[in-house]
Image (cartoon, rainbow, N blue to C red; front, side):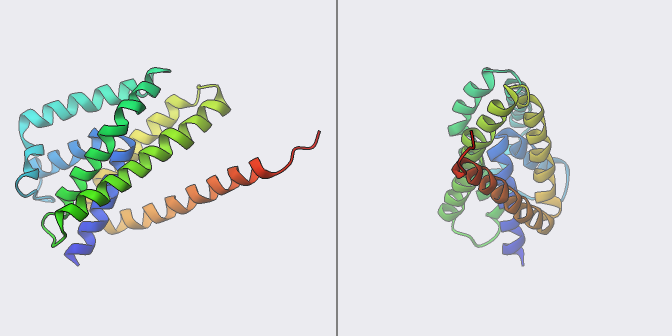
Length: 191
């Protein structure tokens, strides 16, 4: 059961990293440092070091602000193309380090999950929001992503089974939304 809950937690944290690289790292570091809910093993416990927590806090603020500024948010997404999958790999590996999961498999899974979420966000969701709202919708969507990343990160540690259920439901909704969009593109327009 420990392996299963560790995997649910790892998937939830990696999804969060795909939305905001630093929020799940900060949550994991704070929970390791100040609660008994999470015990990171070496070398992952470095994220609970006070200096690292301060740096993660600063980076979280920078990413949150940069993602709300028009045009800067696209530059931020380009930079985060490398950072978010790396953060996802780190939190996935850290979450499953106590379980008997090969670290290479954990890193690859974290890269794929967070990289997939980031790719979907930056190549499908954000361009659609920009196109349909003339860019006005990017700030509220970004704020919603930050809230989702924070709540998912906390729940991934506190209630990993709930996160698994929520991620499956959310994935289904996204799949339906993308399917509906692609179906609209294929339908001929009547003029």
